[in-house]
Image (cartoon, one colour):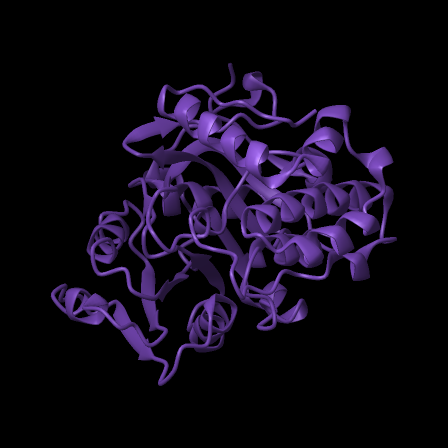
Length: 324
């Protein structure tokens, strides 16, 4: 197996500086651990921008316990949502490379070092990321993705993001870094979207840009925190209208139809049945496998039972999937 050595002494470009954008909303019990994971980074040339989206708990009080001149706090007077909060961070970033980290996730100590090495290896690219692990009720899980195991520990350029992400994503927002100019060129995050903002972002970003990727876990995603994207309710949430993006390419269409299927399943659990039917009617079933089609039309109660069974298996480290 080829190993891409991580050694901060071989980073030659001293101009690489990061602005770390951390959206904060009611994460008093987690944000200090998140910040400590940043302050322990082996690569130290960064600023931290905390954007508090009108938290109603003690989140900011917890943040202010940490005294570090690299931490800046910006407060929204009212709750604007995750997309708007990330955009505030982008607009206020002082450095060219912007990293995103959710306030309940953590980086391993060499995350920024790995990204800096990626930037040196692929200086002409504008988007960078690493692999990640998931914390599911204390069980650390390495997601099953479509990149071959023999590439673990290596860094490479991904030219077709969508082909590799027809299933479990190879990255999350908390292990993504992008040049400020790239983020501005795609108009940042869509503030009209309040659920699955990342999927909308990936379509707009990777239809124009390649991804420089390091296939090694450098980030820990907390999937069981109340209010996190994986646990939050879809009630009154606005999904991205992916139908407007159909036709860009066959690979993107496959990606879109797959996530329209995923949205239907989340809407079904939220009992938003009229929306399920409308969205389901837009899906070209030829892009789904047989099991996905069956689950798409499965009534809510048996589907809900299947989800409970899936969570039980995940606690045992088993990752059932419908991905082809």
